[in-house]
Length: 437
Image (cartoon, rainbow, N blue to C red; front, side):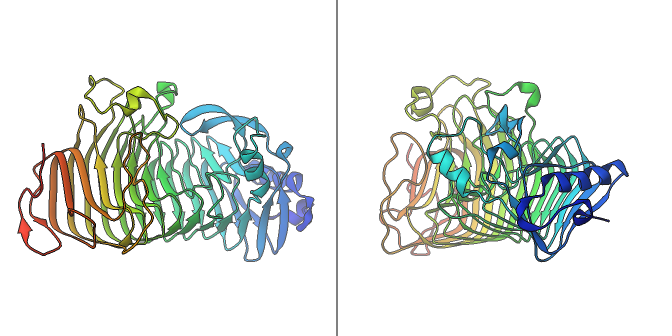
């Protein structure tokens, strides 16, 4: 075990300890691996670069403080929002590593306020640093630590294999811009468990690149389990997309609580993005005070507002750029005090969402709520306490679904087929209820 103080780190929160900490990491890597130890103290630092088989151990009472000077974060090439580009290096990062870890009961504080201000003022030439980001690595562990005030995304593994995030607390201010919690991007075999996430954007978002990236850089995000987590505020509890050109598949979300997130489970993409989202299972989830518990939106307009191809409601030719969503199953869900709609599912007329099921789902709408948009799309209608809206879906199955307190019909169907055993608020099972088109 190498103590950073033995390499000259002061831990006083004032002197910049970057060189001392990096020297300890380099020595540990040169020895073939081991642990770099942080005792009680406040260690101000710029970007740090790990080596294979190195663990950063932050003891209780130890805090890494991110430098507020952009010069302390070198410019590197990395994927950001689905495209390879130059960005500021993360506070803790590395590329093509194996057997790396950040663990302990300490804290990593990105001190992001200055970065958020520069972002809002349009004063940044390059994207902000992420707090932790590894690229093309395998056997990655982040465990026990508290992560706070990230300049942008908090944890962002890119094209990594065997990633475990366990017992981590992430807290970023609700109004901080794009401070997502955990964003696995084109990663394989990801395990996220026992975490508490309270952030200014998506709590967890699965991504796999965009159509603007070179195809040899795209890979699916697959084999992902998200269990035993609590998620507060944020734009979404668990989000899939909209960067999903490499595909997202084999995802299990279980035993979670969402409180006050804008959406609960959110899937999003648009024409031109391509890719396949498939085999998504959500079970044993409680939501309280969300705007909309469940959304699937193939007209996602953020970054493409006013684009006529994206917004057009008429059928288009199916191409490699047509996204496809299929085999999405939710069960044993309770959502109380939902505000805008019980659910919103909108596929494309040329590529409907396929094989969607809700089983043992109870959604109650709040008595009063401000009208709003359940999803981000051009020409979207304001909703307030609406029921379950479903459009362009093939193979919809509803079993033991109860929606209460809504304004208007509990179920609104447009070009949706094969829904079964619908239970409306009066508890009378009905087949093919309120079907249109």
